[in-house]
Length: 624
Ligand code: AHR
Image 1 (tube, rainbow, N blue to C red):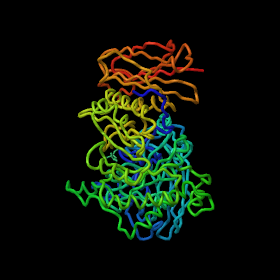
Image 2: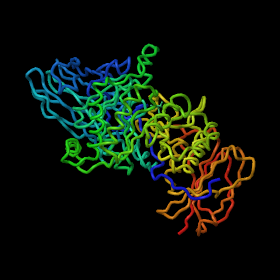
Image 3: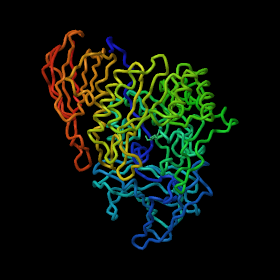
Image 4: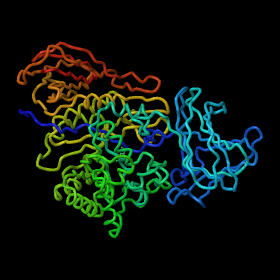
C-alpha cells in the first residue's frame, strides 16, 4: 500500500498529433484548396494525379485546356504547375477543396497564387468563390500576369453560405497562363496562424501540457525516402518539399515544423517532436499490391553524420539564439524568441534490431553530448509486451535512456486488468512516456465503455505520475470519410466537429491535474474492485484537491472519500459526471449523447458519494 504523497509529473497529460485521417491537410491546417501545388501523384494514392481536385470548365462559349508541366517551375522542389490555355474566354480552372470549400456569408478569405503568362501576352485573372452549380459567392480581380512568376493576392468576401463551394480562376482573355501554389485561407484562423479555428480551439480546450508531432508512423516513414525531414517543412510554403503520406495521401507540409511549434506556443503546450531513429518503418512497402515490402531499413552509415546534424540543427532551430545559423532561420520566419524545446523523441515503434540500435545510439549520444538539457525519449516497439517491448527496454536499461515511449491499443478490459501495471515499475530505470494508447473494441469505436477504461487507466497514470511522465491518447483527429484508423479522439467534417466520450475523459483529467498524488483517500464496498478505479490528487497552485472515480460496472457504487489527513475542505465542491449507456457514442447526427455534466455538491473532509453505473466522476474540492 502506498502511504505517502507522491509527486506527479507536471506534463502528464498531453496530445499526440499525427498527419493521419487527413488531420493536417484537410484538417487542422486551414488551407481550403486541395492539391494547391499540383504535386499530387499516383505515389500518394493510386487514384491521384497532378490535377486531382481540379476541374476545367468551359462556360458560355469558352474554350480551353489545362495541362501540367515541369519545364520552368517556380523552384526545384515544387516542380509541377498547371498551364491554362484559353482560346476563347469563359474557361475556369476550379478547385473542389477538401470535400468542397466551406464558405460563410460575410466572412473574408485570403487568396494567393503564383502566376505567369507563358505566351508573351499578359493575362488578367478573376478569382471567384462559387457554388457547385456556378452561382457567384464572391469575386476579385488580379492584376494581369506577365512573363515572370509572381505572387498575386486578393481578399474575397463571401456573399452566401455554402459548405460545398468552389474556387474558380477565370482568365478574362485568350492566352496561356501558368499557375502554382493556388491558396485560399479563411481570414480568421486560430491566433491568425493559419490553423482551422474550431479544431484548434477544441484541441486547446484539452489543455494539453505537450503536443507530440508529426506522428506516429509518419515520422519514420514508408521507406527511407519517406522519412519526415523537418528542414523540408519550414520557410515559405512554395519552397517546402511536399511528399507522399504513409497513410496513402499527400503532405503539403503547409503544417510544418514552424506551425507545429507556433501552435504549441499558442496553446501553452510544450513541443515534443519525434524524429526517425535513422530507420524507416518496419512495415514499409507493406501496402504495395498487398505484399510485404522491404521492411525496416537503416540510413547508410555514410549518411548518418548528416542525419545527426539534422537532428542537432532542429534543437538549434528551436532554441538557439538568432545569431546561430538555425536560430536565424527561425527568426527569419518570424520567431526570434526560442521555442523552449525540452523533449525530443527519437524513433517510433521501431522494430528493435541491431540496425535500429546502432543508429538510435549514435543520434542519442550526439544529442546528449551537445544538448544535455534535452530529454531524449527512446522507443520500445508497438505493443506493451512482446519481443520488441522487451528488447527496447533492454536497450533502454543498457544505454540509460532517460524516458521510453510505450504504445498500446488494447480492448477496454485490458486497461481495467492492467490498472496496476505501472505500480510495479522499477523507479530507478527509464521514465515512461505512454505515447499512444486507446481502448479498441472489436466492432465499435469511441463508446463510453472505452472512455471509462481509459479513464481507469489514467487514474493509474496519476498514481504513477512519478515514473509515467507523459501520456497521450492516439490518434487525435479524423476527417469523416477519410479515416484510415479508428478510434480517434475528435471527428470532423469541413464545418462540424464531434467530440467523443474519449475526448471528454482526457479533458477531465488534463483540466483537473495535480502535482501530488494522495494515497488511500477513496474506499469502496467489496466486490466492485475489478471495474472501479479512483485517484486523488492535490494541485498546489490552486490549493484544490481532486478526486476521480471511475465506475465501469452496471451498479451504483457508493465510494467513501476520506480527506481528514489533508487539511481543511470547503463545504461545496464542483462535481462533473461523464455517464450514460456504456455503448453510447457521439456521432454527427447526435453529437452530445455523452457529455460531461457539472453540478455543485455538498462535501466535507469525510463524505460518501454515489457514482452511477458507467460513469467517470470528478470532484474538485477547495481547501483554501
Ligand atoms: O496512432 C496510429 C498509429 O499507431 C501510429 O502511426 C503508429 O505509431 C501506431 O502504430
